[in-house]
Amino acid sequence: MFTQIVTFLIFFAVIGCILYGRRLIKTEKVDAVFGNPERSKGGTHWIIVGSSFLLLVWLYYSWDIAKAFYPKSANELCQVAKVNESLLGLKYQFPIVEREFKSTSIIKKENKNLLLLYNEIQNSEEINPEEKLVLSKFLNDTNKLIPLLTNENLIETKTKIKIDEITNKIKILSAKFKDPNYPNETEESKSERLKAIQEQGGWGSSGTAIENTVEVPLVPETSRGLKFDAAAKELKLINDEFFKLRNHNPQFKNNIQKIKEQIKIYRNGLEDTREVASNYAKNILKIARRIEYASIYPPTALNEMKNAIIEFDQVQKAQQGGLRYIDIFLFPAGTIVSSGPSCSEQGSGRWLPKPSDTLNKFSLMLKPSVGYKNVPLLWFEMMDVSQIFGFLLPDWIADVMPGEYPVHTKDGKIKENFKSNVLKFVTGEFKLFKIPVPVGHIWDSFLRVFLGLVFGIIIGVPLGLFMGLNRFAKGFFDPLIELYRPVPPLAWAPLIISVLGIDNTGKVFLLFMVSLSIMIISARAGASGTQLSKIHAAHSLGASKRQILRHVIFPNSLPEILTGIRVAVGMCWGTLVAAEFLAGTTGIGFVENVAKKYFQYEVIWITIFIMGMLGLLFDVTLRKIIDKTIPWRGKG
Image 1 (tube, one colour):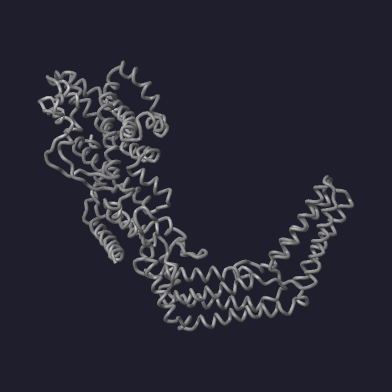
Image 2 (cartoon, one colour; image 1 turned 90 degrees about the horizontal axis):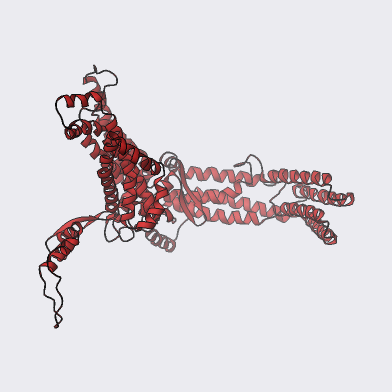
């Protein structure tokens, strides 16, 4: 129901925004010249159209629209797939799926193999003429086996009867398939089926955030599905019966037995040095055995069966009714396929999770009781404010206080003094009041990126400005920066994690290294790119060096610095995920790494979406900062 409502809302939003946009164009001023940045501002309605289009594509190609409007369609297509799977083996015997009869294809292939082997034997210099003569006779005898199978006069009566029986079974099944009451389910079997339906769950039903139980229900849930399921079972029996059948008449059996015995005697009589001739004889025997086990029949022996299969195929397609159109239009880039005892999604719906399942999985992962690896994606816990003091204040504050720490008395008691009370304060070992503090995988990743970025800005911006204004600083620090900057962050990750550990320290330091070089280069480019006329004007007005730096150079460097921050954010996110892949027990990268091992596509897409939204949050914040701090940008 939720997906249906969302789908309708998307359609209405797209149509409404397009109509609004067209009406707005007629009332807007059109005198702005091409290239004016003002022309690109606004347009919220087009943002809605773009976002709605993206969501609509996701709903459509993940088959969530099909699931919402036709929830039983996957189960019915599963039963159709069972029929097609059982029918496919029979259809491959005739020019229905293939261009020619299976018998024709096998004969063509083996004749070619026999000819190639004959030419190879005749051109071989490692076997003598006598051996060539013997091997050629084996080839000729093997080649004569095929007419013994394709001659209509040699086919046995019991084989013809068996073919007729199989053909009649297919015809009877076609007739029964048209019956609306087929397969005439008993009350007992119906009760068992309904019980199995309750146990199997629905299409796309998801378990916990750790398990991946998304699958297509196998037990038929509708009358149409029941009909196809019953037909598939009968077809499988017919299919097995046909492929057990062999067109082996007495003459063929005698001849192939002679060939086997003659080749065996010939190979046993060869000396060890005649290995080449033995191998040729072995290859001839392989061809003879392939002919023996192949389903080769006279050209017209299976015509009635072919017609019966074509008729059944037409009947089963007609019985699908509107399901065929649902499959064509609502299951793009794939369909439901059957493989052995199970059905599965084959196509975009398999690797592109449905928004409804993804939302369900996301809500489960948010809960502290479920989470992912016992850690929620994002939650909060009540923490005493004293722990914040303990985190921020260094312990040495207590050490520099006058006096000594208390010593226990002979009674085993300890009397607190001023110095010990200060130690409790700086370590947070006291009680105040509790406040909610965010916890979880998302918060851990966010905090790592934020800290790495902040440290990079705090150190990188002043150093970059210094390098842009001072010859010594540029000459001294430039080789150091350019030495490590081209090295990919992943190359540093194993070393840093090995030295600093797998906890937050190593990851934050790695992100600091990534953002540092970007901020240094951005600030240096901004400082060195300041117009000299502005600096001369400030000098003329009596500005000091500090004032020139504060009011001229830094404001002119801000566009480069803020652009560098936007670039650094993207680099930090990419590096963080890779670092959490390598080592970590929390974070978005850790979640994606574990999900990859278990093929949990919903979880993988959730992590991708979260990283995109967090990156967008950073970027939107920076845009607001840019609009407030450098409103003159692009208007000079």
